[in-house]
Image 1 (cartoon, rainbow, N blue to C red):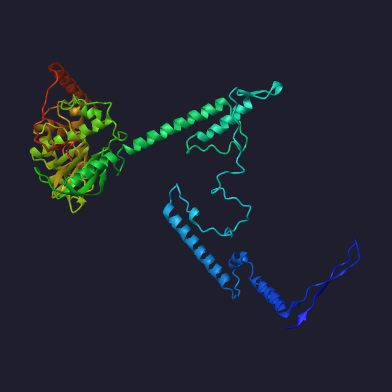
Image 2 (image 1 turned 180 degrees about the vertical axis):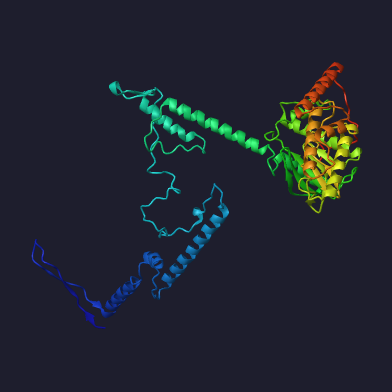
Length: 505
């Protein structure tokens, strides 16, 4: 095989003359192998830089390539993007509207590219733990109580230092108190101002807690507090009621709900019932005590300092009054059961439609006349047989159902020996006489005649003031008689419905 001699010329050296060095002869095969190695090295360096793959993907460039490695990297990048998008969707669905959010950023795929639209120097303050623009909190005073030396000494009582510390302490206020960025403005609060703000913050917290507690423990219009709602659920679970529908009436003392009756072991439950929930707040009806504190049936149990106890007595009072009226044959709701301040009664109406009030009923002349005589007869029965005075009788507390008048709302009814019973009776007679006289009933008596007919007294007077003076004199005489006789002990014998106690569900 031929041999080729290779010579190389060495550049001139400043230290001597140029010399020519003759290389050793090599074979042609060795030369070809060296060229092949160089060609393979060039081909290996032909592959592009894959650091720009993500840039090509983000730019949306469509390039043709025959490199399997680049195609694999591009597919992997696309897959990771879809995975990150799905992860963000799951994170948003998991957190929802919660104030406390959980991040899935640690599970994202880590890549050399950044998919944010902002610049690299931009900082996300929500994801950053340290805000570089946040003002530094004032440095604490050393334990010795001062810093510096000589004339530059600064004690802990320094006005500037104390002002900045007070501003920093505002961060410890309740979250609902907006304190602003006092540190960023280098605000300096004096001790007097800081103490006033602190006291105001505590006062607002206590006031908010009181309002929240009052709202949670009060029965508002068309709503019930959690304790009342629990009692209603217990009645449904016990089978007394099948279900509770909606509110059908609201008043100054109670909220009335419609319900479907269930079953009880001792008493029959009507198919349709009403739940009269007495309001636990005295905001709208503050004069309850005058109806109950002088009633000898409850005088030993009356407590003006406990509103909830008054509500329980108020509900129990209506239950016993209804039991008396039912025993005398007066049309009124039938009591099913009493649970604290919830009274379950029969429903006056049909198919979830309550009976209209006498004020709203469209009655003819004959029906109006018949209703008048029935009301007068019921007032006599209340006073003479039931030993009661309605004390709030009007066209709004009488229902027209099945061709007759039904009496409701007797929680305030009192007995004739009450110090103000005849005064309340005269007011009832005035309301009844005025309504039926305006309704066109020519046979309607005036309020003086009606009072004498119902009470059996024979009082006379030319004016209302003179008549009321005689009633007050009569009540004063009765009150003195009761005080001389002493307290009258009375035990209920009405045979009323059962009372559910705390242990009864």
